[in-house]
Image (cartoon, rainbow, N blue to C red; front, top):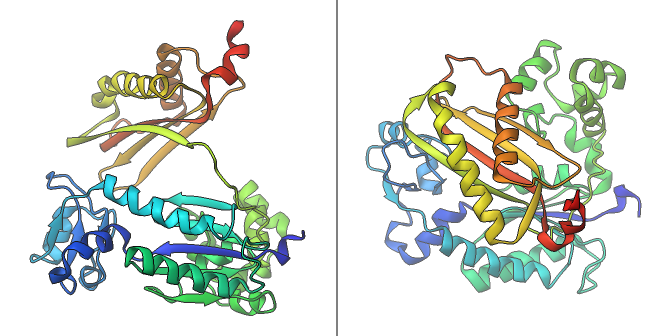
Length: 355
């Protein structure tokens, strides 16, 4: 089926962690509430809408949050509870389509081009899903309906909270004309600055630029930008059956340079390796992540034709990745992490490991 005829819904729960907690604490409903640990270096996992009025948001440090809003109410996160509610929401999705791509506990893409209830209108499907979520969990969800993932994600944010926004195929070019470039997935601060230097501020501006010029400035991503400018996104909704990644992280009490972090990589590799063994999985990809004290994240990953054979293999790849990153020795980090991906059950890999 041609990609422009697909019907994609992006569902995004409204202030999910905070909303789950507020179900049990209705007395706090109109007060500034954040979900965060009481660790002195903690960051906000979620902020209620009244908290957002004060400028509080996810990933902000609690230190800064308390400066902006001294009366902020802090609730410790309970991820077990959020996972349970997320599973309830996914059961609702499964009544409508098997093509579900979860992005996190609180958001997912659904392809409802052909849906299990044979509802011809994707807008109607989105309305049903939002109503079902509210009936089962008491929580509100925002939905974006569009011909592709890129536009559906933008649409779900349009009428938040508890909103629904639809971009029909014939409305696409008109809709994206004045859309700011930072709305595009993958356009962070650096890319946006580069685009601004080229005097490009909206998708309409981007439409006037030839593809080869964008590729010259942005490499492979330039091709994607060119397509986004025409409102095109060929990425399919990928139904993920298997767990995508196993990762472990350490948050420091102080800011550490790369050298000071050196002792943490081996224990992290050990934790990840034990987790793989416990789940009887093998991995072919490794990812390292370092979060600077200004919350900027540095990441690098690599995948291999064959599965990692030992914890030593994993540690070796971690140090190789760090080496390749050429990290400034003066940089200071508050968090480091290791992840493995391209996971498979052990027995499927066993025939490969006889070498």
